[in-house]
Length: 270
Image (cartoon, rainbow, N blue to C red):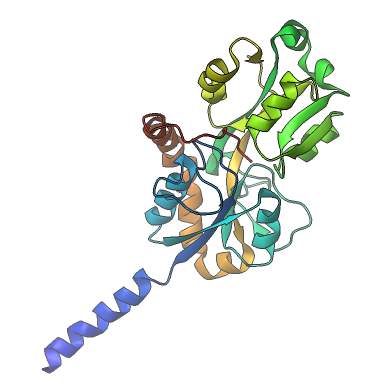
């Protein structure tokens, strides 16, 4: 091999190493929650709209992904311990020093670099009028069902609700609602009407989504502090992509999954 070829191989080798140096281990819920997350524990070929979005987000910054499925309640603890590099959740964590997320100029969570989400309330049709007239008053002191481990449960408790988080997914919470074991079900969705078709198909007119959302918030990519220290520029690109292109891309991915055969389960964000 002549000197010219040796010189050319050096930068190619370096570029190859760079191309594989950014690997993002993304943890996400092991719950079956289509169309966002599909399957339990294992990762199917079509893993869900949110998983596809996170893969595209990482690729936009030149990173590959390793997907790790965990119970929802373990995601932040695993992230803080460095067992995973990132996860996407809606509530900024407290007391976890190794978890970082995008902040604005005032040091607050930056909604411009996260996905917009809405917490909606599902009630029995008989309670629709009372709940619509005074949602906060209706919910205060009542039992509200959420999927186990969701990050916004603390906000509901702080607002005076009795949170029932014993169910593994939204379908079980809907059953509790029909059996009067809870008074409402709270869910965090990308689009407020994401569950309307399922409710109509499986519960007819028994259960309804209230037009008034409980709250609007953002879903942020939360990253381990050490990973950010090693790949800060790539993470910043991911945050910016999620808050701009990601917002437009997720509805397209949701439509893709609407066209796929139903695989059971219920949608529920965390």
